[in-house]
Image (cartoon, rainbow, N blue to C red; front, top):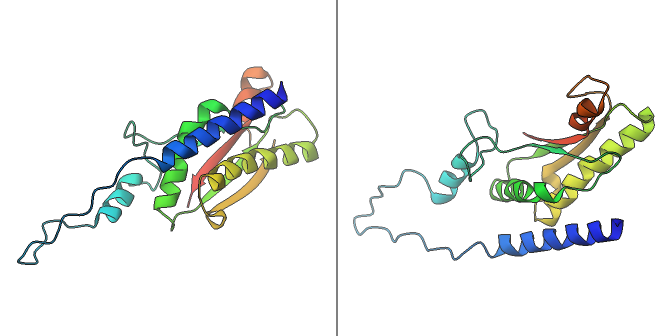
Length: 175
């Protein structure tokens, strides 16, 4: 079962990378007018970079125009990326590839079950799973830092499955 899940995850990742690389044909910028005046106030790359982030510096989801999801949840005692998160992670990769001056910290978190040492290691594996996905999508490793908080910073302080499922996560924070 693990092999099948891993194979599926790798296949989905590769398809996503191929689709990202085949995003479409770029049109050349318009030729300058003969009088050398330009009606454009910012370069296309600058305009795209400005549209990538809101006034608060957080990433914008180009599909909705709202904030881009930065929290990724994991199954119990697992550190593999959920296939449902791949599309959003690809957008993060595109944003970071377009904005090389931006960097992220990926925080790995766990629920309260397990020893402190085990949860720190599991949180690190979760953060590194997101980091590995982003670097495989072309993001420079120098743009990514990962840290584990283990069980120390719960999203939900409860002691049941509902709370635990919210605490098993990785958070991408832009700097």
